[in-house]
Image (cartoon, rainbow, N blue to C red; front, side):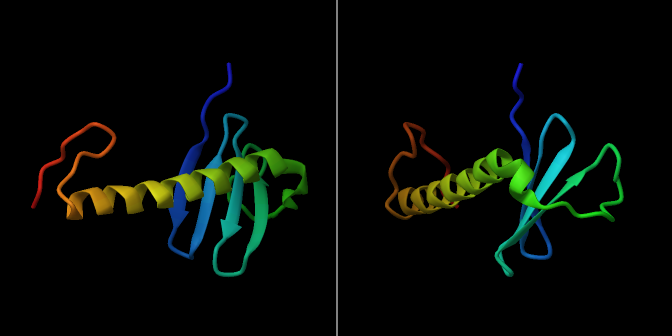
Length: 93
């Protein structure tokens, strides 16, 4: 059974995902660079790995970010225009 990874936004302008194998892929938005950590053997993240071995996880992470950003823009627009968002009415402030 494939599980959906956990996605995180970091304070250091990075995005990360952790999959069910406990592999963390971290992408720096600021530096446009990527590294990975095998958390089972490196829980303190002291030995960064090249992302080439985790390309599928990196693509999922970047896809999540693109969808997330677009969805937030769409939601914000729906609130400004007082219209439903994906068939749901949300309370106004």
